[in-house]
Image 1 (cartoon, rainbow, N blue to C red):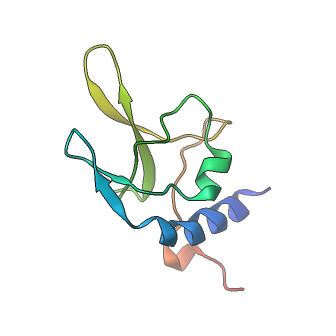
Image 2 (image 1 turned 60 degrees about the vertical axis):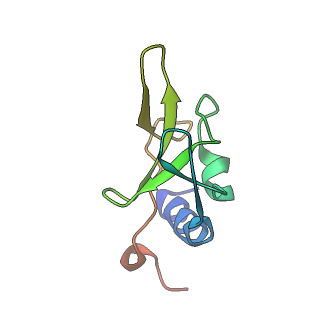
Length: 93
């Protein structure tokens, strides 16, 4: 599957993931991570605490390390960050 198709899938499914819930750290996490994102995300990431940041339009997940909890970019199995396409990037069908 090409990058263009991934972006299209993620962009379409992003619309369904707009509802958020507050986490214990005050961050607002997505209630439902889009299926397209779940399908391409690497397995070692916490997919229960995912946020879509407006600053870069990319998905981030909460990583609880031994010292602190921080947001890390959600990545594909190939190591690429998972970002939603902006509306002008989605090709017309």
